[in-house]
Length: 226
Length: 253
Image (tube, rainbow over all chains, first blue to last red; front, side, top):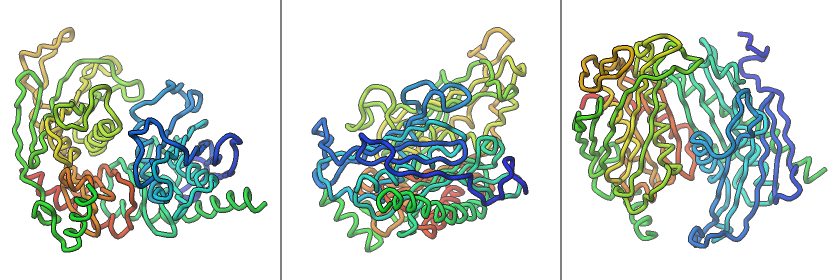
């Protein structure tokens, strides 16, 4: 099957990843998949206020996902929406397994993800960027987290859906994965598919996450090893 | 809290749960239909001492431009401070939003409601279905209880009469065109034990949970992973199968 933008079924969009893009932040990254662009900035570990939020034996990880008003066809109203609040939550849980929070008791680590250009797959682009930004900030991690969305159009399993494909797909399944520990840290799906399809799609997502992981590592190497 | 965590994890190593249930065992589920007279449909669901009420209200409104011949579904959840010392007043927090969105996805994506049958005049007037979920007591596993209450409420919803101008809420005759029954099953991981229907203590110590909504034909309609740990592919596959099995059991209630 030829896809809408001419890609093969298991072909990712052109990817750009860059670490260290915001001078003020402790760590940052820019990630672009086709026409989806995300910037992530990490601040911390730093002292956490108000004090009652502090956790005695580990750092508190906070994530905020937000879309720029000009990122989509119809202007996004600034400020948190129900969608962005849910994505912020699942993003936190996608990243948390990778971070040694216990190294920084009572502190806060804040991850801000801004989507500046949206053409589907924004939460996964955001997770890819956030993971590079955390490593860029020098925060000890078990692994990088790589993420991609997969779907099914007609009888074809496809990866990294673009906006037009998102409208046609039988299901949309974003997956985040830590290749070293083999753990799935984000798994969501909406659609109507068989158990067999669901399993096949997760396997496909894992395979593509392993590719994305290599690009993430390259971005970090380029920043820190020249 | 720390002691409780260690205790439950030690129990889990022996395959035992705090309240003596088996890993695949739900607490007692009680369903009461049409508990709210003024709602178009309603249901109260108890899972153990977790108690949730869902009410369906309907109204006539304009369809979305991209779906001019389909009705509209809106799902909302309120975590009222009556239900738990943890709940506060104010707009829904991330947990309430997540719950409502996961319940909504299960119903929407399974095609449970035949939305085309809710069209009155294409492009102009359609029925809007509002599902409001109210938590009465939070003793864990709110998502499964809320989803079950929502679907049960839809199953007993009667559409009010509409004469083209006014909705007559006194006369409700036609049932809502409900064509599928999605059931939501949540499985948590504690130590190395997988438990369905985690109670409040188990939710405090679980490292990760997976919520899976399935249809009567075994298809999967919604998945949501939550919690600060990851899952291996084998673990996910195991939970999928368990969710289908438990879903079929619950659907018979």
